[in-house]
Length: 91
Image (cartoon, rainbow, N blue to C red):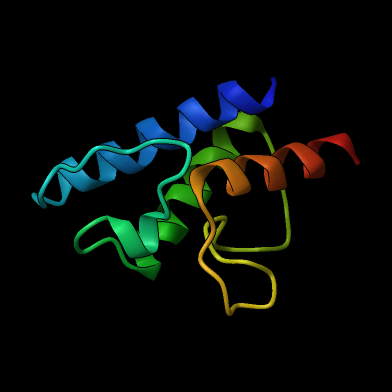
């Protein structure tokens, strides 16, 4: 699985979570930061998205929100989150 495929999976996941939550639909691209750019998307949604992507990719990693940087001070774009997952898969 490559970077672009993972980005598409993440976009589909966050869009589905947004729809299921009944919140406003917004355009989502690889440059979207879900926790900042999507109305109502919060840390719980980030955890839900992370669990779902881990399941789809058959990963068992030690972080619980793919959209928050390891230092917890920075929201990540879909592209950055996908890169983080790709790097974890290579290990």
